[in-house]
Amino acid sequence: MSDTGLVYTGKIIAIEEIEGADFIVCATVICGLGGKWKGVVRKAECDIGLLVTVYLPDAQITPEHASLYGMDFLSSSNYRVKMKRFKGAPSEVVIMPLQIAGGYVGADCTEILKVTKYQKPIPKKLQGKIKGDFPSFIPKTYEPHYQSSLGKYYIEKLKGKSFYVTEKVDGCSTTAFKYKGKFGVCSRNFELEKDENNEFWKIAIRYQLEENLPDGYAIQWETCGPKIQGNSMGWNDIQGLMFSAFNINKQRYCTFLELCKLSMRLKFPMVMILQQGPFFSPKGIELLGEGNYDNGKPREGVVVRSTEYILGNKPISFKVINLNYEK
Image (cartoon, rainbow, N blue to C red; front, side, top):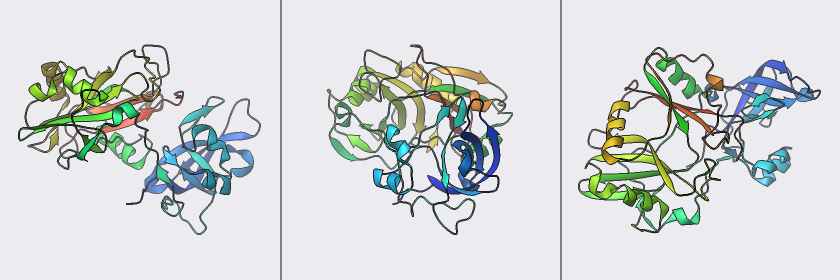
């Protein structure tokens, strides 16, 4: 199955000067269902109403692609599109001259440009021996960017409702489940054989999840620590921070209160809660991701969640990335 939703035909709708910059400006682009974003571009390649090709965060291109389309500047990030700042101006996407002729605003160009989604590398000590595919009865974790069309839809639905904000931890997503008497531990894509030397399993063993996790439940956490995604939080030992729980029998996510109760029952720590309130407002949301971890390094960002169900059987959740975060 091909990746989609990573590259769009967009249109520049606004241009802002950047203080102290002679050759670059900050452009706002709309991409239909791809959302509304800001990106730093060369003045010579920027004009209101101009159609452009927009690469969204985590778009992964090849060196050959970069050479063909004049995107060699991405070599410093291993050809991955990342949010960052230039002279203080936000650059959430990469905006390039139109690369697909005859496009329209909102056209998804991901497949035709053969762009793939960036996948976090899994360190060898985490890979483990694959037992099988990720269980079909548990959803994989995913939070859209708040600037995406889905993120903006979530924001509208969350307005005025109860919410909480958690620190976004840059680790490896992990899932443990117990269902019909069977216990398992999974990486993002696979169930793993039990291995006391595997870091995912070490966390499950530390908190005695095989014995204590209620049947019919799955919990999901970030495994973090030395040699994992750069260990931005600076921990000396492997750690697990729970951010979600899923009721398998009822096929629904746990509410915030249920998640907290399960965390206390298992004595399994949760991700840090930064804010909590009865009425969500999007005012100032673009700055919400900014801030530092306890060790003083810029955090990756935050995740905003509703405390109760708003859409179907899951709380709303979306991420706000810290543009000052570098790994």
